[in-house]
Length: 127
Image 1 (spheres, rainbow, N blue to C red):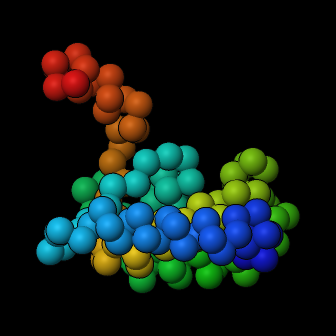
Image 2 (cartoon, rainbow, N blue to C red):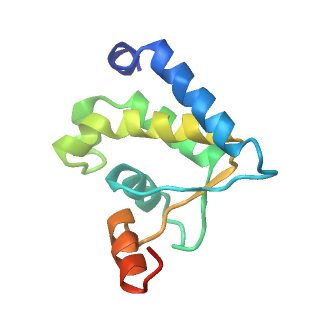
Image 3 (cartoon, rainbow, N blue to C red):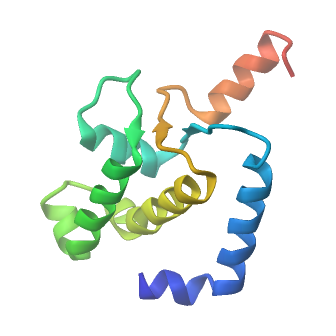
């Protein structure tokens, strides 16, 4: 967490928080959709069915768990590849903050990736 705080200063975090809160302000409730390797890995570790979301509580507990392990433990005990083991904690913190600042209680992690979804939308003339 210290490394992430050093990499991204408080001004940037505050600007992101302000932006998220501004975007979600008109909505009564918000549910997030996560895309990318880190959230996919966190989802896979949950063992949940594909159509079920991850709760804020679960993502927070995974963040705490991952943060309690050393880089080497994340590789050896969780079989994370070295690139993933290095960044997954920071990614989990970003997702947690996005959930907290948006008021989202859940995040869905679809099997289809963002780029796949864009290509599919383009194919069907939606973009």
